[in-house]
Image (cartoon, rainbow, N blue to C red; front, side, top):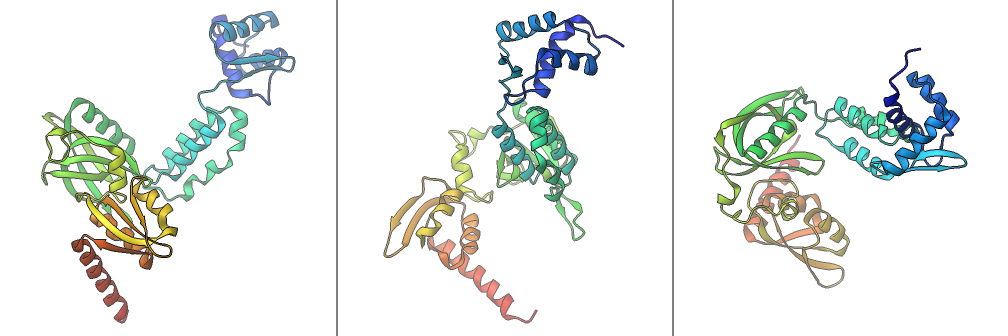
Length: 330
């Protein structure tokens, strides 16, 4: 039997406690001794195990608890409920390829130990979520992070799916990157288009062939109109529920009290609400007009845009176009 050096015993002790124990599954020193032997080929005396456990408890403050029933690891980087939340976030992320989702979930599951892994059955449903197939996603994230940190522009090819659901290249972009934002289960880059001269939002999972332009400094965001004080990211998310790039405007709409939950979910708690007759309310908020148009169409006769008139007219034109299509023979 090949034996590991004695100095590794304390590391293996912690690894065994991490993998095999929790409050419901303590291990006796005899069981730990057996695990050291069978898993790592380490022959250790009970006294040595006891001394090393005391060292981990008292000197290293590793959150190890001992009782008559045995010893277990009490403190972990994440509680089981926190790990489940993180796993669910990965599962529902539509921008991560299936393979990477599977790997991430398995890594998170291992953080909870063997008994936690046995309870997380839904990790196998990752392939049913239809995530986007882009091997360059994590490379893109690293490159964008590097560019933001170094204050450099990036260039990338943007892709769209064709009728066969295969990504096809569209245009090459040069962008000053400012922030990566997770919104509506998608990962976006907020950046300044050096060609269009405005702020735009790009789906990171649609980018390929990304490069950092090491000789091209990024345009400072505080030099752009409306961003002199930087970016309020909470306000940004609330005013752009669909991440359109048009400038947010003051919008007034009429709706019902039953829709308040949806309004707060999409536009944040700072919206103004004024009760009217019955269960009718008027709401004033700041939002992207394009996003507001599609939001209002989504809720049909439960939402009516009152102002601005330009947006009300856009909705009317959109409805006329839709009606004409459905009145015609298919």
